[in-house]
Length: 209
Image (tube, rainbow, N blue to C red; front, side, top):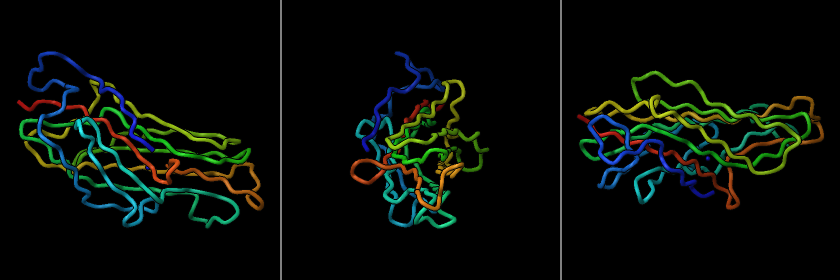
């Protein structure tokens, strides 16, 4: 973890030389397979992936991704995470990187409590990037939204001609701070009005030489 947020990708040009980043997706359809799903925020059967019709983005939908502290919460509920290992099947001659990720959810935080949302992304066999982190302070009882954006020159692409799975690690944490956990509950979820969360990842495409 709503509707997908449609945001244009970062790099565009009329004539695309091999190796240059590009917002135009390949003409053929792209598919994404979930290889493994692990984590307390995405138990079996609670995460799904769909590719947009224009092949410019994919959306991960969760239905049970919530961290909480206080009344009714177990000691381990303050932190929830999800690790997705995805196989992105792209047409020959193209490779991809992730230019942007959009997260949305809901948080109820008592005064003194705060929540943190973190994420990082990497290709199999390559180093993890630094985690992007967003903090939300109580009192707060409303929707939240976070966007991680990568500058064009810093986008990491899957190596051309190699099949490497794409890994997404996300995490939600709630800290009680000075709030009274004996009488109140604070929580954060990647959630929407229909009870599921959608996290949208925007592709950046590159032609292989």
